[in-house]
Image 1 (cartoon, rainbow, N blue to C red):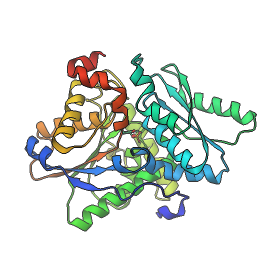
Image 2 (cartoon, rainbow, N blue to C red):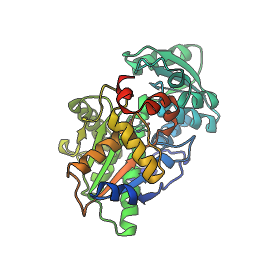
Image 3 (cartoon, protein in one colour):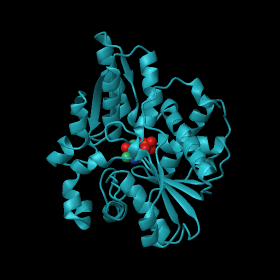
Length: 340
Ligand SMILES: *Cc1c(COP(=O)(O)O)cnc(C)c1O
């Protein structure tokens, strides 16, 4: 496989740093915890979607698009990074935002990522929760195409085989950094949602036979559904790359025990994880994805599933812009967060 064969617009600040979390590791007394800083990809406060968009926006440009459209939850980091990328390329951006949490908090609905979407000049349509949002997206795009607009649609989270190439690349980058520094890695963990991050990583890790297990902490779907989504996307990504057969079903592991009441609703341990990273390491997590992933990481360490002497890398996927939509949950603290 050879990533340079695929069109790409180089915009992300890469490689992202790989850093050791000394104070968090000491506090937990378990393995050496490292962090891969994909919160620092450089585009409009960063995050994991920028790597995917490097490949997706290159396709949009090649297709002659004048507008990109995508969809996500109200506080979508993907929508914000798409809006910023489109601004950089001089394309228009139209976003459908799904009310997935039912929150009436004005900050949730207009601050954080939504504020940034609008700053980047994107136009927004809101949708009620529970719809088939990729179908809504295609229908809205068809209406614009009928008026003569050249529209390129990007699925939720940028998670298709093209977007997942960004995380194949991240797997190469991370293993390369570890090799250069003589760091033998025992585990990689990350939050997993629309599946492109985990699917791309697993294809990349397997393609180079890295032999480092990857664990995804779910943020929405139940475990069987999440694993099926990741597996199917990994198969399609491997096919696209010309290496079918590199991924087996057993390589795809998701733990969905830290989701709580639902997507975008932080639990007590989500808030605790956000506080620990902020106070011990000066790093901002988010209440929807990385906070839940980090809660899973912390719990696994406390339960001895990752042991002293091992080296665990937490892939930080970004999302801190959403904190400004969740000030009430953070101020109320834990118990109230789940009820909010
Ligand atoms: C989208 C997102 C994820 C999940 O990545 P997927 O590729 O959708 O699984 C994790 N963290 C943050 C901050 C995100 O915005």
